[in-house]
Each structure stands twice: as structure tokens, then as C-alpha cells.
Amino acid sequence: MNFSAYALYKKDFHSELRTRYAINSLVMFIIVAISVILFSIGNEKITQSLTDGLFWVVIFFSAMSGLARAFVSEEERGTSLTLHLIASPSTVFSGKLLFNLILVFCMNIIIALLYAALFDSFIIRNFALFTVAFILGNIGLAVASTIIAAIISKAGAKGTLYPVLSFPILLPLILTSVQLTLLSNQGASFADAKVELAIVFCYDVIMLTASYMLFDFVWKD
Amino acid sequence: MVWKIFLFLLLAFVCVAGIAFPIVPDPHAWYQFPLIPGLKENAKIIFFHVPTAWLSVIAFLMSTIYSIKYLRKKNLDDDAKSYAAAQLGIIFTILATITGAVWAKFAWGAFWSWDPRQTSIFALLLIYGAWFALRSSIESEEKRATLSAVYSIIAFLTVPFFVFIMPRIMRGLHPGSLGDSNSGPVIDFKMNANMELIFFLSLIGFTILYFWMWNIGYKSIILKDRINKHSIRE
Image 1 (cartoon, rainbow over the protein chains, first blue to last red):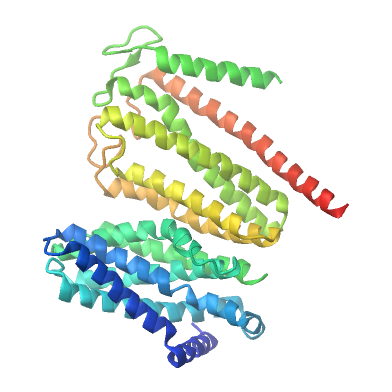
Image 2 (image 1 turned 120 degrees about the horizontal axis):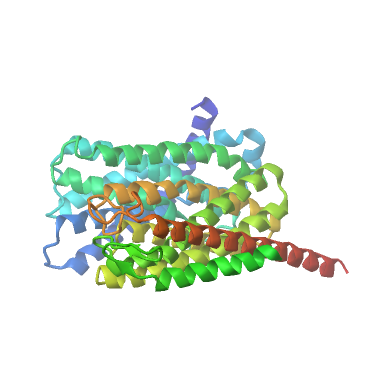
């Protein structure tokens, strides 16, 4: 990662701090989503596998509500042409990816803390496995949703299209991550989760490589 | 012209043979199929279900190959080829889903049970659906071709996860899944020679049919584009 990508990230970070649009709406979205789940559960005792599934449902929809901003905001403000002038496509992608990565990590840590506090059946028994799976899953989520966000912003920022396009791409990641979360909540060892961890890792590498190769075509009109 | 008659005879033979040839415990005559434990009479779906599933992946692969070609050469004809392949692909995916669900009703007792294979074919349907939704949302031809090509390449990268990895790590009901001991005709062919012959004839016949349909499909798309441009210019 070079210096200009970091500069681009700082630009996004400062404009975010000025309005706090993404942070505010994301936090509110998470609270709304979790309270809807809590209301619909009521006094029901839910199983561990259902809790872990719902955990990733909240993560997926929060990501879908917040991550498209990175590129859509550039198109809305008409600043994408300036970016064309000052930076190469891979730099632009690195900067946006860095911003989205940090956003995804903040968002998912909040979700995980709220889940641990509010759901009785969400108990992490193997914390190291959970952390590794969580980090790998977040990287995959950020990479895949950043490149889809770039496609969406060029397609005229259709809000409803974003989850539709992202879901099939994210499905292998989500299915494996649900499995991994369940394993770590059951206290499985690293050896038990070896195959799942390998899949998530492969997914991250494949998506990262493909995104960098294909972003040029999306970015240049 | 000759090959069209040949294709008709081939597919007619495959349909008749696949449906009518009996399954017996110990086959002697050339027209008898062996009994595969765990599949029984239901095994006959292999002549129709497997080719459609095979073609739904082949169509997706071709759509991606022509997407890559488009990104390299920026020739709109390649986009038409990719589009025609995807149009056929979604038809074959729906056929594979339906034949699979009907088979599942008799073999497993329910039309749908989220077996890894069923999950994968559902994801393939979702990808095709999203791809067509993306295409219909963009007005400009070049932009539509570029963005849908990029999406199709990214989506194709997830196919290995669904087709090859998921069924191996999750326990499933489908023949060839993890923990399947007696009925695995997809992986190790427990068929006898004539059953294999008809299976491969069916695969070849359906593949030729697909390429013929694809050929007509993309030519009609290119011609339609040309007529549209012509009428705009006048």
C-alpha cells in the first residue's frame, strides 16, 4: 500500500468526520436490526446455530446499507473526475478499500459486542478461532463489497441493486463464516475448523486479486 | 443439414433409451441397466438431469470467457455472445433445478431440502438473476457490456466454491456428497458399460444442442442491434 492510497483514505476519513453520515446511519441501522430480532424472538429460547445465522444476517444487511457510500458519494458529488486526474485506478481502489475495511471492522465489532451482551446463546468458547475467522471474514466482506460498490456507482447508483448483486458473491463467504462462528461458539479447536478457514482465506485472496485486476475496467469510462 | 438429422436421431434415441430401458439386479442383455443401491429406478434421471446441470455451468463458463474477450478487445459482438450464453444458461439452470427437485421428491421425500447441491444451483440462479438485473439497469451499450463483463467474471470466481468445495465439506443427500457410501455415480461411475454409453451420448447430444441454440441466439442479438442502429440513423 503506497502513500497516496493513505492520503485518499485520510480524505474519506476527514469528510466522514465532518458529516458523520455513514457512522451515524450504520450505528442506527445496527440498533434497529438487532432490536427487530429481539422483539420477534420475545421470551423464546433460540438455539446456538440460529443465533449465529442471525449474527451474519445483521452483518450482511449492515454492510449493504453502509458500504456502497465509498464510490456512490464520489459520483454524487461529481468528484470522480478529479480522482481520475490525480491518482491511478489501483491507488483509488486501495484508498477506498482501506476506508471500507476500517468501517467493516468498527461495524462488526459493535455488532459482536451487542450480540454478546444481548443474546444468551451467543457465547464464544474458542476466542482465538473466533478472532481469526472474524478477521478473515471481515476482509472478504470488505473486498467483495468494495468492488461491487464500484460497479453500482457506475451503473447509476441504484440502491436496491447493491444487495442483489452482492448476495450471490458473498454467499460462499457467509455460509462458511456462519459455520466458523458456530464452531468457535461450540468450542471447537483449530484442527476442526481447518477446511473452513482455508476456504475463507482462499476466498479473500481470490477476491482481492480479481478486484485489483478488474477495477481498471470499471473505473475508466 | 445432415448433422441436424443426426442430432435429432441421437436425442430421440437417448430419450427412448433413458426412459424405457429396464433396470435389473444383474444385467445380461445389452439394453439392461444395473441396479445402483440407494438410487434404484430413480437413477434414470441421470440421463436428463446431469446434462442440464452440466450445461448450466458450461453456459456460465462461456459467458465469462466472452466477457473476458470483450474486456480485451472491446468488441460488442463478444458481449452479444456472452449475453446469448447467459440466456441459455438460465434456462438450463431452471431445468436442472426442476428435474432435481422432482427427483428429490421421490428419492428424499421433499422437493427442497437445502442440500449443498441445491444451495449451489440456487446461488447460480441468483447470480444469473442479478446479472440480468444489472444489464437492464444500464442504458449505454458500452457501459452495460463492460460492467456486466466485470460482474460476470467476479461471479464466476465463486462457482468453484459452490460446485466443488461446499458439497465436500457439508454433509448432503446428493449422490457424490461427503458421507455418501453406496450411491456415488457422479464421482465413481457405478454404472455398467451401456448405461455409461447412453449417459455420455446424452451429454454429447445436449451439448451439441446447446451450441446450436447459442449460435442462433447470438446471431439474432447482433442482427437485432444492427437493425435498431440502422433505423435510428434514418
